Image (cartoon, rainbow, N blue to C red):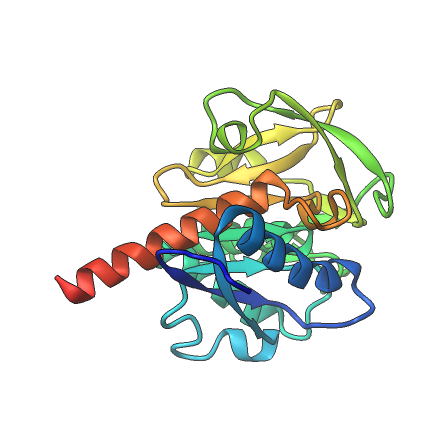
Length: 245
């Protein structure tokens, strides 16, 4: 591939890679398209959930993508990777299961809801934050209303978008508490259910219940994926500048 770029960014794909997960098979196509169409080159490494919580697991990465494919083999590993990206200012994208676990990490670590649980992992928990959706979104497309003056709106470029889903779980309780502690819910479905979350003040922290990696045929990356790539390349450039002085 003959592509001129200023910097190559390193991307951590956190999740348990499987050929049975459609989004996992799409990601390599998206990375190729980003390089060819946008000159955004990402050197991607898959980090299994069991390894994601290891000390130094995110060292040297310019972005973290918590990918779909839950239940993860290690909930703790995925939560640790999300926390690391959030606290260290590493550009972060969470889609589907990554969205769900981003909310779970924030609830436990920032909001003090230490018993908050994901029903897919702990169906008998007393404090379920992520529960089965009243209507499964597996294989569905649905509208998302995007709030103005948000990261999501600046990325998507529209107040309304139609997105693809492949999930059966979503957030239920404690949303006001998450808002009070700084998390912004910047996208909702037409019934007002949360579909996008972001963290103001972070270089790039965006999570979507829908799966932007399933948009189209993979030849034109979704704006959300492109925005993550841009943030990663910007971080790589800043790190190189700091290194060389």
